[in-house]
Image (cartoon, rainbow, N blue to C red; front, side, top):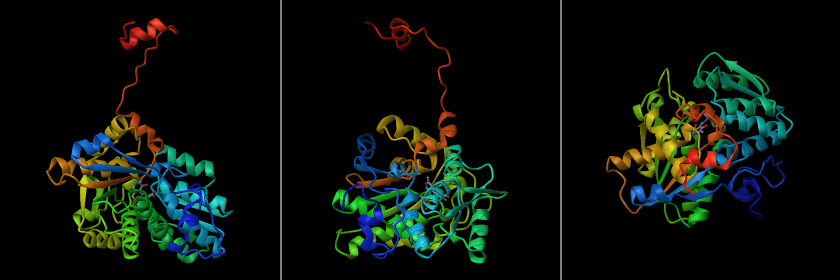
Length: 353
Ligand code: F0G
């Protein structure tokens, strides 16, 4: 299978897609696993970053969406619906229009990063802004799919988890075995569940010798799995994971416990610091929520809880360009211009010829 193939083509035998089923693909998966020398030095280990923002719509959601929309197409669906903090809606819209279906997206009004909203608009989604948070949107989306002819493509749809587990396959395929630790952000809790399923299946089939411990990180203002109970009014600058009642709480908790892992909270400041550090020292620009795994690594390392010498993979879930307002809010741009000549520019830079 060529490396440009989408992930259904590459991993079909592991997925609920029959030989004659339609495949709706935008060439997702095969994302870079980038060695991070600065982070590695810092924690005296070997740190790799799985850059999921390199997917066609800029987030890991495309892995689940190619499978969910392909399955929906096989079942003759005419419309799909999802609730979303932004990335799922961008992905659902792209794959649905590709399949000739109507994309309906329910969004928490005023809480979507602008890049993601732009994606939904330009892909041609039917956008319904809901007066409520993500959890409210998901409740409505589930009922809509139950009572009306629309297919639900949130991660409560098991096809989504199936597609997303392929990221764990790719990590093992590249590194040759599972890492010691896998860190990632946790919101609605589908992705940590998906990775765990992928790692387990590869180990069961003898394609890896072990499974990693799963470390999941939530934003401190939206940390129901850390607290052990839902949060009624979740809040964080990381709007992607502004979720108070994760749909996959049970699967995720099982992933944590079976893997010998942990879930921890990171503050908004820690998230934004990690976002800045990852961009400015490793050259990887991610959206705020996506930096929470890096924030978690730095936090637990500072607390003396990261043993040296480990192989660590961190998933960064979405592209930094999705939320430029938040990224730019911490920087001041030089506003005065210089004349268009080389001496003026060199002067401004403090360079001496
Ligand atoms: N990172 C990003 C960038 C996300 O968009 C999400 C979830 C997560 C992490 C958390 O993943 O929900 O599987 O635990 N975004 C969903 C959405 C909720 O609607 O786009 P999870």
